[in-house]
Length: 308
Picture 1 (cartoon, rainbow, N blue to C red):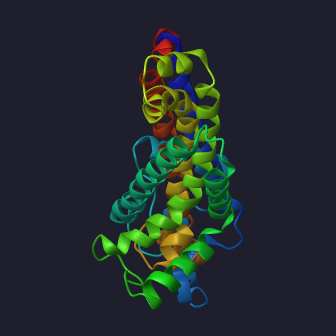
Picture 2 (cartoon, rainbow, N blue to C red):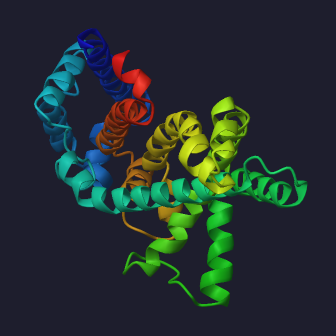
C-alpha cells in the first residue's frame, strides 16, 4: 500500500513538472516579444521603458536561469503576472474558476445519470428496436462537435422556443444548455461502455442465480450487473472530467459565459502567455486529483482491490 501511494505521488509530481516545463517552453516558442506585449501600443516609442521591463521580468537572463526561477516561483505558489491585466495569474484564474467548476460538475452529473439510466434500461435486451434506436442516438450525440451542438440547442430552445436565455450565467436556467452541450456526447460513449459491461455481467452465473432466487430483471441489473460495468466507466469518467475542465473554451464562448475558457481564449489572442501557462498547470492538477479520486472509487466499487 505504501509503495502504491509513493508511486502515485511520484507520478503526480512528474505530471505537474512536465506541465510546468511545457508551459515554460511555450513562453519561449510562441512568436513575439513578451516585452512588446507588456508595452502594447507604446512599444514603438518607449525604448527606455522596454529595457526597464526586460530587466524587471528577467527576459535577458539565460534560458536555464529563467527556467529555474520559474520552477522556484511555482514551488511557492506564484504562477506569475498577467501581461494584459497586470494582476497575479492566480487572481485571474481564481476569479473565473467557480464558473468553470460549476459547469464541469453539472455536465459530469448529468452525463453519468443519463448513461446509467440508459445502460440499465437497454442492457441485455434482445429486441433490436429500442436498443438500436438508443445506440443510434448515442452515436449521433458523441459524433457532434461541441460548437455545432451548442448552436443547435440555442437555435431550438432559446431563439425558437424561448425556454432558456441565449447568453450569460444568470441563474440555473442559463446553465441548462451549456451543460447539455458538454454532457450529451459524454453520456453517449459512457452508456455504450456501461452497456457492454452489463451485457457481459448479465450472462455470468451470479446473474442466473439471482434470477433463480426470484429477483426481478431490473433489480438484477441495478444491484449486480451495474457494479461490474462501473469500473471501466469510472476510468472513462475521470478522463472526461479532466477534458471537460480544460475543454470548456468553445462552450463558454458559444454561450458567452464567464469562466476559464473565455480567459484562456482572451489570453491566447493577446499573447498573455503567463495566463495560458497557469491554466495548463491548473488543468494538469485537476487531472492528478481526478485520477486519485478514481483510484478511491475503484476500491469502493470493487472490494477485491482494497487488498491489492
